[in-house]
Length: 81
Image (spheres, rainbow, N blue to C red):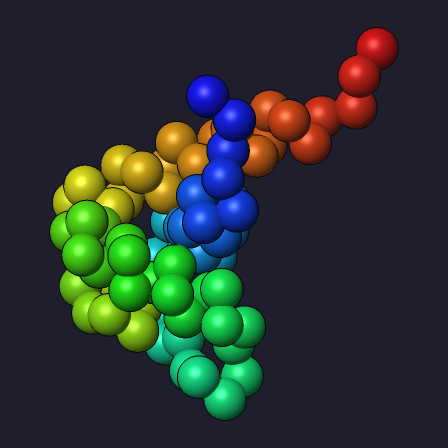
């Protein structure tokens, strides 16, 4: 199953969270964020991964998802060879 643009946008939002600070949330503003990021945050909230439709904090499930998303990015960003 290839990643859809919507899924990539959701992964990108999850990658923005600072997993070292559980008190650090995100506020995704219509004025400063792309339309894709705003919609991704809404979808993540609907999936119970974010506390608010405009970001907020990670839920327990959201933290698990963000950890996996960020780990995958770390692996994929390693130079090959």
